[in-house]
Image (cartoon, rainbow, N blue to C red; front, side, top):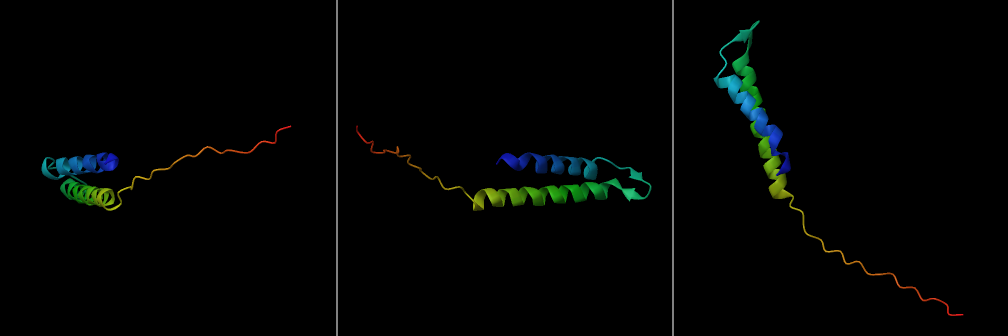
Length: 74
């Protein structure tokens, strides 16, 4: 699960804004922005988990066989 980092960061930032910050900026609630970021991060993480679980790569064994050509003997 290599792509789990960005959603986890988004969840962490969203939680900090939602639960720890109590300020408002010109009528914009920072708590609401944090809640939105948290929800988007959770949805993004769930999508990543579904992709990892649902589309497992099958191991394909490729056998390389040498190319043998008959040479004309002179």
